[in-house]
Image 1 (spheres, rainbow, N blue to C red):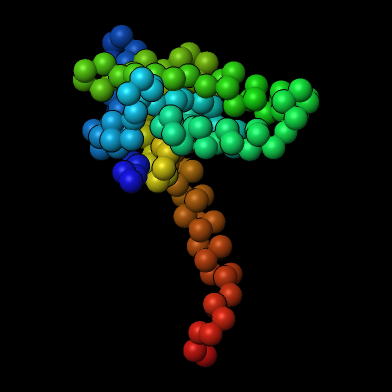
Image 2: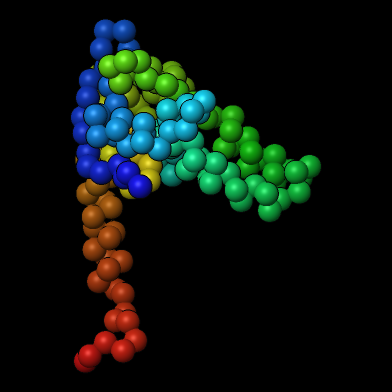
Length: 156
């Protein structure tokens, strides 16, 4: 499976388009099925950024909805938060996309953007917010890994 790795920075062009980094485009195209959008964008629930999903990964994100009564308020709220703000997009021949205004506002994007790979998905950030997020993530990862207990059976 192709993964989204690294952090890449690009600028919006005069027409408001931004180029998806070549390694990310390659991973998207490898995973895309005929008739599906190249990428599905949505605002993050946790951070001021845009999440970018392949169609297959987005479908798996929606699977927990099956656990709720389809006529319940819980199902409706979860479905609205997942689907109402989702934007399936295809790129042009040069790999450029136009981000919907609501997503640009959510991520406070103006001239430049940072694309951050997270393995099976990637995020689109304001570059200064992305740098801060990577710093926070590294600090938290250090904390999480230093507090882990050794696996049973490790030599003392």
